[in-house]
Amino acid sequence: MFPLLSKARRSVRTPPAPETRTLDLNGRLMPLTIRKNERATRITLRIEPGGRALKMTVPHGVPSREINAFLDRHQGWLITKLAKFELDTKLGEGSEILIRGIPHQIEHSGSLRGITEALHLDGERILRVSGLPEHAGRRIATFLKKEARTDLERLVKLHAATIGAKVASITMKDTRSRWGSCSSQGNLSFSWRILMAPPEVIDYLAAHEVAHLKEMNHGPRFWTLCKKLCPHMEDAKSWLKRHGSQLHAIDFS
Image (cartoon, rainbow, N blue to C red; front, side, top):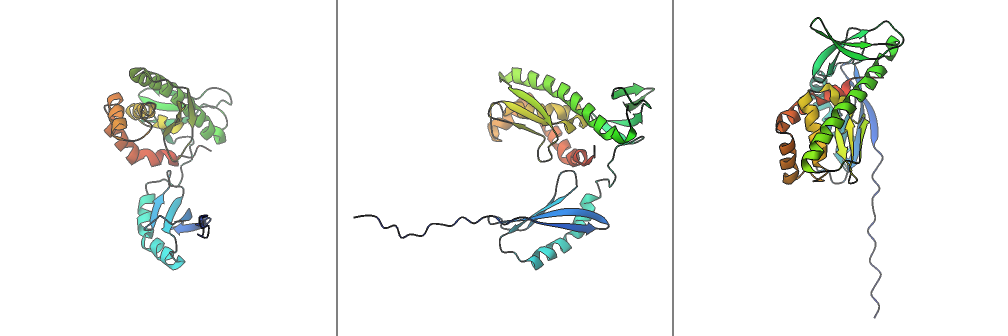
């Protein structure tokens, strides 16, 4: 006797395309992406790293009027939270940037050619940048990438040797969703913006990704190993939680 084949196949629902809007928050225009998720049980709203966009997740079937009402109720909350992000985050003459947690005043060298260098002159910390003023952001980004690679390669080598792990490669990126990553092939990736954080935070990031070479998860064994490599782990995590978004907000274009 042949089995019956009359049971209907389950249809796979294609997720709807996200809706995009622009919110006016006291004159500050913010792009908003609204995604519907069948597994979501409530509406959630978050500010993307850097304070440059908003993301909203809503359960499937929630009507637009309910979404609008939610946004209206949370407008004050958004304005308060976004206040910590400066509207003008461009880098230029006289502005400051953190290098390994220390504020440096940006100063143009006056020369079209030359290197970007961090200096300690007469008790003042200066980041001297050559080239055209409108190219300062890109030159500073290049400087941060180079310095971040130097620091992280040294720290990764140290932590990897401690646990007997092998690193395949190290790359610098400008990611917004995470500070670092580790692949199963041993390839480590870091956000070069971490160079603006204090040295102990840079060390924590290196230890975190090296620990993933042994534990590809965030379970108890991973955190035990991470803390062994970086005893000041909790303080570093706290610093990133408080200040990480401000580092993402800086515009190097």
